[in-house]
Image (cartoon, rainbow, N blue to C red; front, top):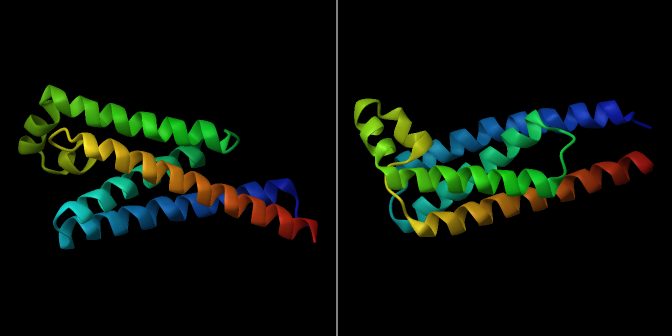
Length: 136
């Protein structure tokens, strides 16, 4: 039987791998993809990455708190685009556009909600599966 500490370490390792893989897939989607579907996929992946990063930093936080926090952070960043500052900063240092975006799009908020929801559902399913396998 595994100790709880081992389970938490394994989950945190998977969360760190998830962050890294999500960044790679997101950048690939950004570079190779085009059109509205690629944009939606990129936004969903952004929310998944934020979820995984928050869950890694706060491993004992509930899935609900992490998912709502991820959605909140993504929404705040999207709303920040209304100020025009991310677009100006992105002209000076282009990687800023990858983190803060450039222009507000309300559809992005839906993609963020979907991404955070999918990340939460996956996290719950994997956590339950790990618990069940420890009981056996």
